Structures are given as structure tokens and as C-alpha cells.
Amino acid sequence: MKTKIIPASEIQTALEILQSGGIVAFPTDTVYGLGALAFDNSAIESIYTAKNRPIEKAIPVLVGSIKDFELVAENIPSMALKFAEKFLPGALTCVIPKKSTLPPAISATDTVAVRIPNHADALNLLKLTGAMAVTSANISGQESPTTALEVYQQLQGRIPLILDGGKTLGGVPSTLVDCTKDKPVILREGPISLEQLLSALDV
Image (cartoon, rainbow, N blue to C red; front, side, top):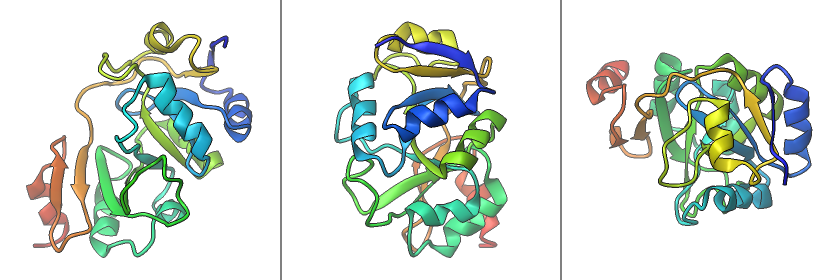
């Protein structure tokens, strides 16, 4: 497979690949992500293959707006919606009850991790796709890439397309919070603290 790098503005090319069952790398507000359409099980499985990613690791979902949470989740806790209003787009990922129609390759559990990235190129793509299963565009265990070239160095020949949006900020992964309990439970610490989350709930 030949891997092409094109400007992030050429979204239509990426969309055609995604809609034909392919996977695409693109910039987000942290690192470059590797994504597939959220309801394409075989495309999501090819993310695991391209990355040598352990199959038991769930893949988060990125959406372009709060209303798009409904595409991949049901019975969304009010807590999650409050967090989304306050912190998204941004460095927060909410674990919420997943829609039963989501493919098993995303998650073997009854929840899904959802985030809205604070990056124009990612949001432009997500507005066209609705929802994407996305994880970092690297070989599992290797450095997460912050440029299109770094993606290419790790994944050339494994993926068809990289959208080049320049260097991303890198840094700390998003705060991962379980919103399915009575109170928020932080599963991975990140830029947004438990205190900030609690204050958003007026606790």
C-alpha cells in the first residue's frame, strides 16, 4: 500500500477513503490521530492491524459537536452533557453508555469514550463524517506523532492517507472521566482536574 500525504484542506479525498472502508491519519489538538468511520467494523479492525494494537484496547470516538454524542451513545448522563458544555471542544473524554449499534471493534464493554477535539482540521472532517473511531497514529508503544512526517515514518505502507495540518501541540492526553456513576470518576488524569469537573456540576 502506498501512503500519500496531502494538505489537510483536501478533506474530500479523506472522506472518499473513509466512505470506501479505509482509514486516514489527521491532526488533532494533541497528536495526530488514525481514524475510521465509527460504524465501519472492518475499517476499525484495520486500525488495530496498522498500529499492531492489542485488540482488547477500546478505541475512543471523536465527534464534531455535543449533539453528535447521540450518534454513538444513549441514555447520556446529564453529568456528561454538563462537562461537554463546559470543557468541549478540549482535553476531556467522557465515558458514557454506548449505542448498541456501535461495532464491537470499538469497545467490548457497554460504554464508549467520546471527545470533541479542539482543532479546526479535525472538526472540519468530523462535520462530514459525524463520528469517527480515532486513536493515536503510531505503532503501539512508540512515540505519538505530532507531524505528518512522523506519522509517515511509522505507518508508511500501512495506511493510505495522511492529512498534513502542520505540527500539533502534543503534550498531555485528555482527562478521561467515567460519567456512568453517581459521581465523576477519573480513569486517566489529564489537563482537567477532578476539582474543575466537580465545580462544573456545582457540587
